Image (cartoon, rainbow, N blue to C red; front, side, top):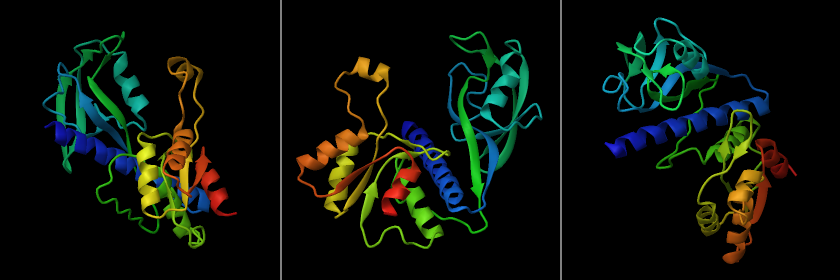
Length: 253
């Protein structure tokens, strides 16, 4: 059961990464796209939630009491001020089927409000005139976001970015183009070097004061990647990036 839940979460994270990659690449290339809000994706359910056993991880809640909202915040705001015990009707998608269930709101621990008792995130999809297909094989999670974006943008703009170079890298991709840190970058440097990459993009996100206080020796992804490349005597160029434009500008030199 745990493996199934993890798979569903990884599937969601991967699809979200692809959606954000498409949006950023299309926007950078000046191409049109539409982002359609589907509802809220169920990430987890509290044991005491009245919806536990009705909703499942991976379901998408589309309406509450017949109301369709355009953000997870709006869904939350609709129920948060209602008294505990108030019954609400949820419309949701489960394995491609539309279903409904009516259950009571519960008090959310460590808060002064009521709720469904689920962990949720926004669920959306991207529509483009020319369909975009991303083959991910056995990749899981959002860490390939930057490279998805780069590959899509390169195709949209004529495929001139690579210039015969073998490019690797990692980093999450936010819908505004910001690159985020990931785990295990040292291992990805080793793998990229083994595959003959000549360029490796690494997230270069400065440490916050809180992070430095908790770990005075903290090194961000870029610093760890440089250290890993040096350790294996790699000739790859480790390139720091904070956003997608950094990667494009480097490749366009």
